[in-house]
Length: 474
Image 1 (cartoon, rainbow, N blue to C red):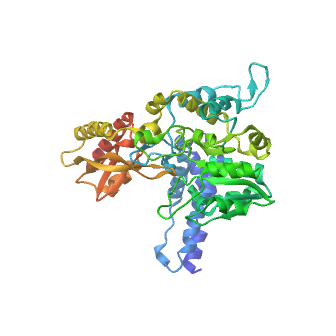
Image 2 (cartoon, rainbow, N blue to C red; image 1 turned 90 degrees about the vertical axis):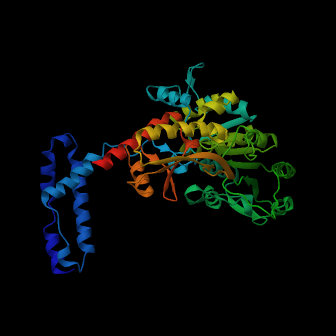
């Protein structure tokens, strides 16, 4: 440490003085002193770090005045009431965008969440019997009716569902799974890691691209507890491949008295190939094929809230329900309210396709997308300067969220160029709005994919661009 650094450290702003300056500001009146103190400490520690990291820079290092330091701390305190989790407009064309919260809820699900949240509810109270009930009963009947399952259980996400099932059915024993199905899901969570934490021992069979039924059968031994099949919902292996189908694995499981668990990942209740998408096994298909337990997500192709849904035969679901981990992984009342409303939608599939945004975005004909794109482009031309270049272009959307990985969905893009801003600068300004608009950038153009835009969001896009142009003139 040089002499200049030592001198700077001696003259770092005093936290008590900063607090006194901030407490005199009317706009920050009422904040607890502890919060103000922590903000001041944060500013001072940051300055200390800059001084210590600035060895050799000598006179280049400058400390803020006490008033400037107090301003920095006041900015931190003043920012606390601003919500960090915010609604955004998704114009990227990624329908189940994990970073943007995946599936938007349908109107009825939102209304149910609000209704349940505003007061007390019968979450674990049986209104008919006047005694304690089970939270799962609110959706169990619906899930079973829609899928043909004997029983149902819901936890907080599909990774939790797989963890709970493995722990309940295979702790301390072997779970057989194909090497080609040892997938990694979002956030670097890998099936082998989930299995290890569950207490089950992984028994790999076959190769990455070819796993035969005989591979599973040779691996079965006295320590085998389950056969696990994992749907590769976030990738596909093409070419020289082979896999044992679910029906064959079910027959093998029955032969050796072993349950077969099918982790579907995304999960789907409708036949997507009817709408030009690739065939995705439905939950009912898997249960009809004889799977003893099926797990899948609630917030992907299902279009509901984040949840891990466990369906299957009653004898296995009861073992899973009694597992102590179940309480740690259970869903709360708000998720349950949203999930129930989502399931009610599926009682009328045609209505679900129109009312649930994920299903609508996946299946909407490109001709209808183009009509909406023309409407958005016309709105933007009315508010943007004459120098703005606004045109329509063809493109592709994707399902995202680890679903339908090989399917590109035709879409229409609204392409923007403005003479006063680069595409990168315009993208940043859209992203930093109070209601952020998240877009694509390619070839120095900002691209708005209309497939993921709801008509009600068009005004938000227009207003954001109009304000950016106005601010650019001042």
